[in-house]
Length: 454
Image 1 (cartoon, one colour):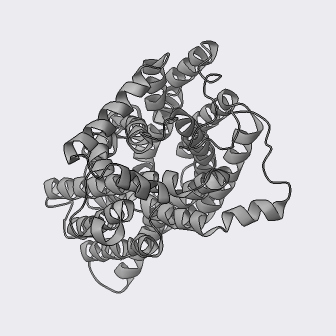
Image 2 (image 1 turned 135 degrees about the horizontal axis):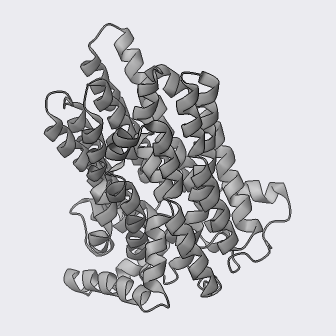
Image 3 (image 1 turned 45 degrees about the vertical axis):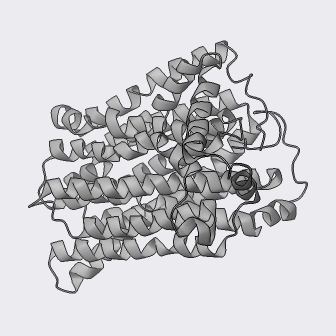
């Protein structure tokens, strides 16, 4: 994976001299392909997460059960286990027809569509077990698609387009998440207004979301197989499948773990976005409990939230290029933690749309800043092109631990403390990551991250 610029993290920006040159990079066909694939990656996450939680809350499922549903995100945490299979194995028919990366991409997207349709057929009020099973299938196929997209992005973009590709991917990923949250809620309300039952409205809303995955499928069909992938395939075609899998798996782990302070860096990866994940697990149920309607929440997330996300993404990119990597992480870590206090304030204010808009703006703006800077850090950690796909899958899987396991108790905490204190606690859980950040900085960890080879 490539760092945000061609120099070491935090060094002065020596790239394009005019805004026309900068814009032209974002309009390159390869960058546009990555942009649409980013949308396809971001779309499914909320369908087994926050959007599903709204559906469950409206169906009468209690907060403790809703909190436990964070565990269905387990595949995002464990995806590094089968990432070497994606790197090394062929998909019958698909690989021969479309190539190594595009074959896996199309295969995972077709499975994802089927999984979302199966989830659409469940009923949270009557069969939470089948809802959990359907959500688990969506998370598994979605995380597999993420593995392929990450590898495709790294291998298809030349050095000069890596920064634009990363920024486009992150922005489109967030837009995909907004479509499957606010967009899905609007669609469900639209179906419900036609007179059908709420359960049927949710089912058809998820069917529409399954159809949206076709955007990524069409993109994969239009794209061309990365040259690096084709060369790697040609170089290893005489090896057995087992040998290829072993090379990808062992190399990715051993290369990383031999680095100085590797375990501390991995712990930091787990904890950096935890403050964001812990509060995000309960944001939708909190807003519904305050008395806001589904449409109130959707309208603000879709409008104000989208604008805040895009502006926050640009702000995160500016911070990452203007300051050193360590300083950027400090900025991102602190602002995303402080944003939780806006929800504590909202809990006292009550059903004020202006207050909700302010809280959602703070959350989306600071989360986008933190995400872009965090992706830049993960990119800088992946310095060996032989293991990039598996190594990046390992790091992003560890980053999902906070969202999946550590956040599973959020419902119990919220039920015990009440909403104002809960979001104050969400701010405090950022402290361990900031302590680790200070320790790693003193150890020279960030100074050792040089330019990334592609």
